Image (cartoon, rainbow, N blue to C red; front, top):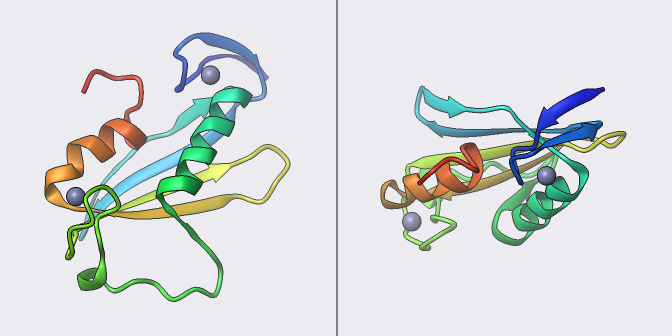
Length: 119
Ligand SMILES: [Zn+2]
Ligand SMILES: [Zn+2]
């Protein structure tokens, strides 16, 4: 336990950090980051993920790449895969998925991979 800057509100906080590992993947290329959230921001981010992304459930069929529909604009054949893996303290990790088209790559990156950085 220590002080960390929260990836959500940007200020130092004390207490257990809740970790999130977003990744944007296209073929063999990926961009990943490691985010740390305070309790409140983590709850906000999870609520947003539940709203806009699809939770990955064990036993579910993976979507094939050409069936992917961009989670932002609903375009078909979205090439990029956004995975957000969250580790709530004391609970099972959860993973969320969203397909992203090339046009929305910047928006998805700003929302999930690099929150708090200028767009
Ligand atoms: Zn926060
Ligand atoms: Zn799109």
